[in-house]
Length: 442
Ligand SMILES: Cc1ncc(COP(=O)(O)O)c(C=O)c1O
Image 1 (cartoon, rainbow, N blue to C red):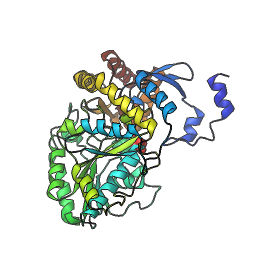
Image 2: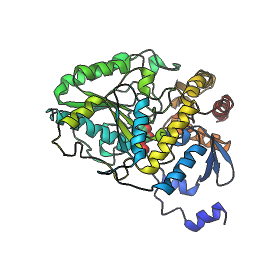
Image 3: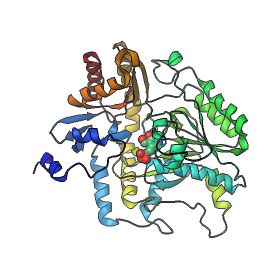
């Protein structure tokens, strides 16, 4: 049976697909059957240049032999061991390796299985930290408009994308939201970090006057907002957020599920912006997408507060997942980190960034493009609603590129790009020239 016959035999009906229009997909399914390096292979035989690293996660490219081998070996050696009061070596080894590349002072890691679990865990850690220090009244969580922190009740409450919330009622009480940083009037077509908007962070100060700082546990932001269409923080903005949080005893959480592991040419966005949060939520590039894994890297202060304030022998943080620190995920993460380091992938991303930026901004000359944003190997190409049909146009660009062997991601009226870090100049050219052709032809 070929793949199409198998699919028909199996029917597409039983699998309820996530974040998908199931009815649309199932009338015209796009089925991937393999992947290697920068390319997917589709069931009809055509190849697709992966312009989005799977879903912002396959930073080392698909099917890296060292990662594949590590997973295979580990599956034969130890398939599963609980981490509840029990341990296996690889989780400890990976925690040590990971914290050795984390920003200074963030020396402890709590493992989860996804980005959503990572953000929920970070928020719970913030609450537990204040509780341990006798400040259990600090319960309010402040996120940001247009933020995305996954789909758990905590992360979704802190997030700022209305359409993701409307089916789910009130969510967590007490979540509040700062304004987003998108300012096309002053910053459209800024290469890299936009110059204007550091003062947008002062809205946090005003919110603290409304709530009283002593009721606020944490502020959570994506250093670069990804899922909403790639919004780059203005120069000075993150520094100001850090300052306000520190002044008011509030923990700052960076959701680095997208920006971690080289996306910005450095291990973490915290390194790129030289702003150190108290907690970093991670996932995606951690295992190159090969095995589900996430985590929270915590500051020594947070860790110590929980360790020192629990009764002797007590569980210090009543939280965790059956698969926290799973052996296969730990093996994949260790191999992935080895590959990132030994093959200089973060450095490659940094060195090719100027070329990426130049090619992205060349699209400015194409009619219908309203804004171009980029940093590291991220780009958002926003289409004008009026000129080009905006949202519908982004989907048409996706279809056009797909037909011609290039995978991009349409998010509302923006084309989002986040390729594997190993992308070459030729592949960057192919990506942007296909988008340009598509915009010119539609
Ligand atoms: C910034 C950010 N946080 C959290 C998540 C949620 O991760 P997951 O889908 O692994 O739960 C995502 C997913 O795209 C993300 O972009």
